Length: 597
Image (cartoon, helix red, strand yellow):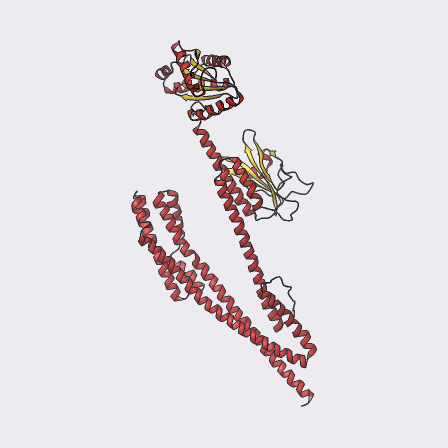
């Protein structure tokens, strides 16, 4: 056989093999498209049905909460959630549009009707609870029949999703098998083509087939090992090799996107778990110092690229004072007035060096003409400013990260915890203060007396107690009314506040009686202080409803530990001295005559 004939035959075979190779590549690509369509349909169906079970559970939970608590907030939440649900036909239409079969739709339609039947039982329970029949409402929503209906709905949804998964899995398996088969055939055809080119057209084979196939084979192997960072070969020519490269490039890009999404999901879950643990710890804090410790521990973990500070608002001085630092912030001052921060002025997050141009805060020292990349997050409570979370980019990092949404969540949680602490402290202070006179009440006396005596025992100093009683107080009430009596008590309370030292403690003991603890004063000094208080009270001119209520006098009994009595009898000794002052004609100061043991 002539060489030309052999060459022509080889050329014809090469052409046929090339056509066959292109066809198998196209068939493999088509099988991959069917696989992607099946996966997309499966994802759409999962997304369309994922909220059915959650909606049923959410409505049941809200209905049960209202049946137990009777709270209108729970009822409003239930109605809002119930109104957001669409009709059965509307809800199944979206699932039909993404490829559910009539049989699957009938099964889902029946499940949704069961869910709507449960809503009827919930409505009956809510109506019973609204009538005050809590037992009846709870009996409906927590009955075995109701639980069986919930389980049946859940099982039905799971069977529906399982049926969809089986159908789509079968379609995916068929598509994968076809894709693998055609790809295997394509590889065989390419091998034959390579052999012909190697024997007859060596240079063309080497330049146009062999090198690309070798490189793509390496890429496929690395992609099979999920190494999506592999260097990608460029094939600008439009042929079967180019189509293969394009298909593999699409596979690689999808893998990169999937890996990135998984990393972002894992990172997001880690930060949210960290914020959740931080919130739980803050809820258990009893003092601002405890809360500050939690913030110092968790904030660097939530935002490791940011140095930060925690500021508390000092209302008396009208300044923001730093309570904690972490990771070495250097630009923000330790104290500044609230108006120096634009975040506090606006009541929202402020970042002057972000994606948008903004005004820098006065409390942040700038690096020349370069704006410091900082974030101010105001902590706002129900009654106004509470504090500030300040963040700045560390000098050893190139990005401000993390997501600013995490910082907002952090600020919201810290603000809520701080607001709860302030509210708790305010309620505790209100419980310890007499609302009429503004003095500490009797609840706080025992603690203050024990602390004063303990300190005096350690420092070997005396403690005096003065029991003060407004003379003829009943007369003010009888002659002028109880409002006038309250005016007298307020005036006496103000006189006590003006006459005591910073270390003295004044209490309203009960009725018209007041008690004054004077740490560090002996018998003579305590009697002189009591006499001064008596004269101050006698000089009061109290008016009520444009009427002069007349003179106000007080009788005072003074006792001193350890000179006149034992520690546990200090108040009773002062009370006994008060009784002697009243018997002696009132408007006078009396002390213990003999040691009260």
